[in-house]
Length: 274
Image (cartoon, rainbow, N blue to C red; front, side, top):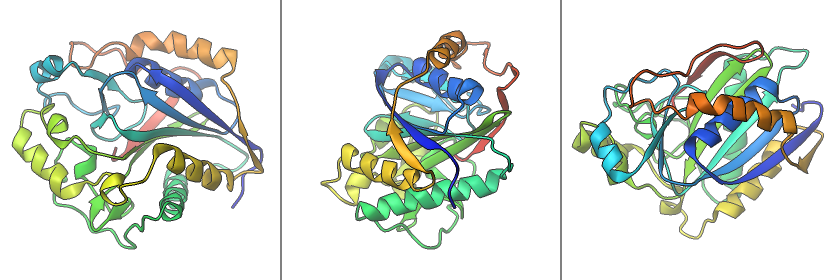
């Protein structure tokens, strides 16, 4: 299928966790054009799904490692962002209101095509992993996700707003499993789940670069539209991100959380496995 319009592609410099999440939330609230955004992290950041509980986290260990903790505007479970391709994809609501499931499957197929272009062959059938209670995104593989040899290679979550749908995705090139596991109280358990349930793409293809995979993703996402344009942020989008920054700058492990105020045109509901 093909949507009307030109896909805008953004590529941001390294930003803090709160800045990155505020920019994604701004896309959901005020963006008017389909947007594929790639971004980097200024420091190691643990992102939590919008409704994920913090009781499983080891706050003192996270602080000792110097990691930032943020909430995502989307759902899902925890991800430690590091050596990866991180992206968001905003699709404005058109005349037809596509279901959450339909759009998720559409993004999944685009990612699979991108991986195949990069010489990586995902599984045709995904078997559910036994770690359904895990707080970690990459320990959880459900039938709608993307795996290689039964191990998850991408985490994607979705938020549905009044203006459209926002997807956030993490595609690890390498995985620092032990530091990731140290963020949680049950460290050994989480480490085992990550070892058995997750793969970084460079464990499959050692010469794969971030730039090569991004190029393949831009090409494949672009096929959904009438064309592709590498662009920049609109001033009102950055203004909205600035307004939202205070919400996302408040650490979920510091006490009372401020994320969750619904605004006109903003977040309606969020889902995802992370």
